[in-house]
Structures are given as C-alpha cells and as structure tokens.
Length: 247
Image 1 (tube, helix red, strand yellow):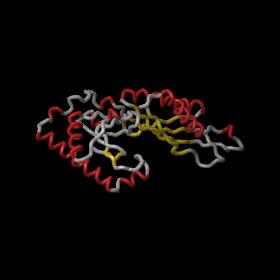
Image 2: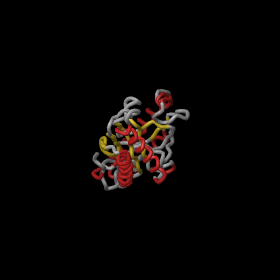
Image 3: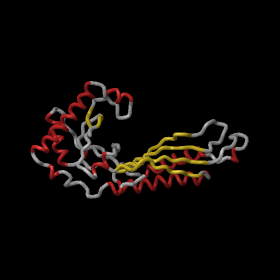
Image 4: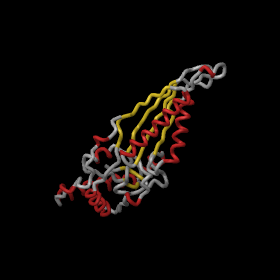
C-alpha cells in the first residue's frame, strides 16, 4: 500500500491507535432561572478536554491524544443534559497504547465525577497496531523507486512523533508489509488540508501514483525472480494482532 505525502519515505513509522466515542449525561434546567437544578454535561466535556490537555505535558513525543466535541448542547438558555466527544489515542506501540488508553479513561472519568455526570464510553472498531515494515520488501522497493527517479528516505531519519496510523499495522503483524509515503509536492500543504487534496490531481500527484504502482510491481517481480519469498517476515515480531484491544 502507498500513501500520498509531502515527502518520500519507504518505511515511515505508524502509531498504534484506538478510536473512542464518549458521552456525558446530566440533567437539563433553565440556565438563568435555576441553573443549580441542572447537571451540566457540557462542563463535563470541557473538563475532559482540559484534563487531556494537562496530561500532555507528561506524554512521550510519540504519544498523541486528540479529540473534538461532536455535540455540545442545543440552546444557550438550557443546561445541556447530554454531550458527546470523539477521541483518538495513539502511541508508538500497542503496549504503550494500552497504558495511554488507561490514562485517557482516567481523564474522562474524573470529568464525570467532578461534574456529577454519568459517562458512557463507546470504543469504535478495534485498535490498530504500529506498523512493522518488512526489511526485504523495503530494500527492494527502495531500489526500484530509485531506479524510477524517486529516491526514498528512511523512517529512521524522520521525526518518530510526526506520524499517523493505519489498519495496515494490524496486517503487518500477520503478513509481510510495507506502506511507503510518496511526495506529491503539495507546496507546503500537509495531509488532511484542502490544498493537499487538490495537489493529488496535479501532474505530481499522478506521478506519485505511477511511480508507486511501478515500484510495487517491480518489487513483486524481484521477489519472484530472485526467489526471496522465504526471507519475508523473518524479522517481524512473533506477536500477532491477537494482543490488540478488541474495541
């Protein structure tokens, strides 16, 4: 699998991730006439966000916790009785993700306790592990990409904290896998920006698709012609995705 990016890297690191939806429930009341009779679920959401913000100072550079309020209430004159949030928790490894997940849960639970709200946690899907790039495929792909005029950088030279996540991580614990990032020359834009999306339709974006497909095809040919199949997976961890959190 290949992915557009503002750089060329054959074995970019990817973080393990868990996706969480949380809901706070309180009690509505008139916000001016009788606020003391309400239980403010928006306060719980704001407190949860602030708790996570304070947690960040003690996190590793590869720890990421980020979220949004998906529903914060209806009208200003009613104490919100319900709010919802969506969060991603990421870490360098599945083991670290489990630790960070527990810390995030403590932040959400503390917010509920402080505001007298009830908390509902709804994990979304299952966790994605970090990605283990197969060194044999990495070597062959990098060689073929360079032959096409696209030399590839290496993940070891990149900031390990500047990374996303992918379900290909789970695949990489079961099958030999790579997930190169190919430069579409987005002129300063980065992934998930509108300007970046627009650059996928440019000649540079089309060149990345062509180069990526050709390098991948040539890599499979090399594996077959050189009969290197037995090398695949030899350096991959023996721990499979059975250890992943089933959310």
